Image (cartoon, rainbow, N blue to C red):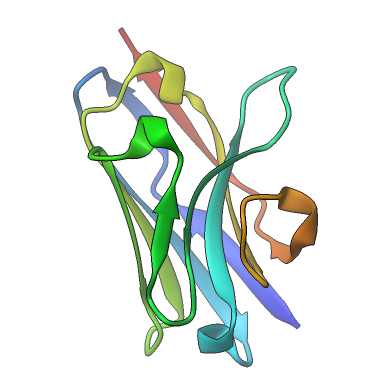
Length: 120
């Protein structure tokens, strides 16, 4: 069992940066792929980025060059550094633990989310 708690969201202006954190409790954090998803009102939960247990990463195209995902296994924490934020990045951001990939339903554990709002 893994519990996940996100933090770091907020209201920022376009071009600003935010760092989201996801603190995990429970066992075997390092064995899970850890991912960020986001969901806007009325839309599906979309994949943003994943970092696998071996450290390999994958992003959606719109995040490439702006977002960085990394994990600290000793602290059991996942991060998402978001730079040059755009209004279209506005969403609730969720962290998830599971086997990896870009499909939400394959992830076993989810946090409750943190709101990111980017004003133009």
